[in-house]
Structures are given as structure tokens and as C-alpha cells.
Image (cartoon, rainbow, N blue to C red; front, side, top):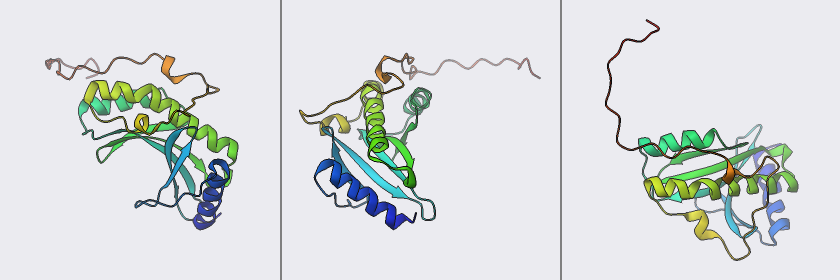
Length: 176
């Protein structure tokens, strides 16, 4: 499937699911309002394109050792998605091969992104600040359903690391 064909298919799918045909934003992303929250969709690649479904979990946040440590921990807890910092935003993203996009797995990708964002964005903001952009996008119609792999918010995740570094100890490695 070519990228242009995938884009048209995904755009038509979004229109059928939401009743509204999205227009690409300045980055070429399709804004999607689904289940009462804002997501974005991007079709990437040319020969074998894939579809990225993502939320801006936290905006106006600068990169730091604390933030990057938290994102590493988060990525160890979420399934079929990833969290990363780009620009001044934390993005939580799911990917699907364009040829595999169906209404069911598209909704699952949105639910997975929403569950991860709901679970981890407040922790990020508490530790390093920022603005809860995904949370701000929610309407009264927002609904988050249980994911097959269990609720993300109930998974044990360590508290964010202390921003004060521990003193460095100089010891010889036992492996030398």
C-alpha cells in the first residue's frame, strides 16, 4: 500500500468513526476527536507506510535527566506504544502497519495511548512540570475503557528519581 492510499484510507476511517473529516494541521497530522479526547494521526513511510496514533501528553516541558529517566521507566511499563520527548512535548504514541489498520485496532491504539497518557502524564507533571495538553483536550464525553492487558494506572512504577545526584563513589569494578 502506498503512503497516499494509506492516508486516504485512514482519513476516511476517521470520518466514518467520528462523523467529521479531519483536515491536516501544519505538520500534516490529522487531528482526531474520539471518545471525548484529542489524538493525532500521521501516516509515515513510502513503500510500506505505517500509521502513528499519538497524544501530546505534556506540553511546555524541557528535557532533563529526571524526565528522560521517567520516560525510560514508562517505556518499560507500556505495551505496544512508547513515550518520548521531542521539542518541548512528551508524546505517547502507538504504531500500526498501514495495511493492518481496521476500525477495531485503530480504536485500540487510541485507547492504549489514552490509558498510558492518563496513567503517566500526571506523574511527569508532578516531577518536572509542564502542561497537561491531553487532559485539557478532554470533553465530558471522555471515556476510557479497560484494555485487555490490564489498567496501566495500577501498574507499580517507581517514584521519579531524586533530582539531586548521589555523590560519586570511586571504586574498582569487580569485573576488572
